[in-house]
Amino acid sequence: MVATWGWIARTRQREIIEMYNRHIDKIIETVEHTLRMIEYYKVRDLENAKKEYEIVFEREKEADDIKRQIIAELSKELFHPIDREELLRMILTTDDIAAYVKAMTRRLLLIIEEELDEGIVEDLMRMAARILDATKLIKEAARKLIENPKEALKLADRIERLEEEVDEIRMEALEKVMVFCDKSKNSLCIISKDLVDSLENASDRCEDTADVIRSIALLR
Image (cartoon, rainbow, N blue to C red; front, top):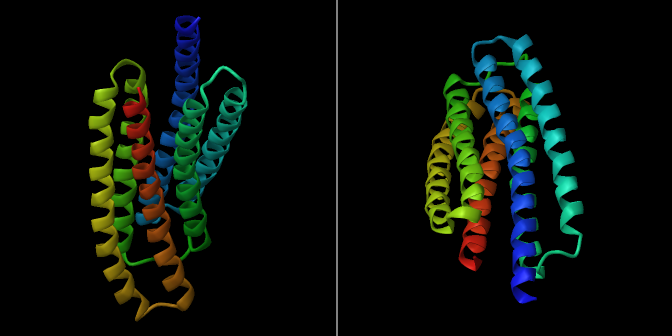
């Protein structure tokens, strides 16, 4: 009976991880289009920047829909409480990545007709690119949870290093924000810092997700 229950639990975990893969795919797409929006904004292609925002909005909504489906599956009784709690934490933490990058694009949309300091925009692109790399590693690490938990731990370490890189870029960006604020409108000053902070928060959630992956890998 114990062996049968263990097999059922592992099968259900695998099913949830497969659903999670679809969830993280939408989050990866959300980050990809966030980066593209910043790139279009940088070259002042504002029409395409606005279109990218619409795609970000749709992809984040689709990720939310999948998140709700996964939570509905986790509410069923075929999970050990610890497994359920850890999987739920991984899903909700990952979902926050999309929420924060979407928040960043909404702020950028507010000032789409204005021009930020080019150095700040370049730092935003660098931050978004590393968040994109981190989300791709999260997907890979989640798949490894089933077949090779030790490899998942190594991938979690790589995600953490990317978060550290984002922290460094953030500090460089904030130095530029301070200079920019001395010569810009108050509204642009506030928004420019919010843009940096939103991406930094998304990066933090990547690291938090890596911590959950470590916890699940160690439990396995």
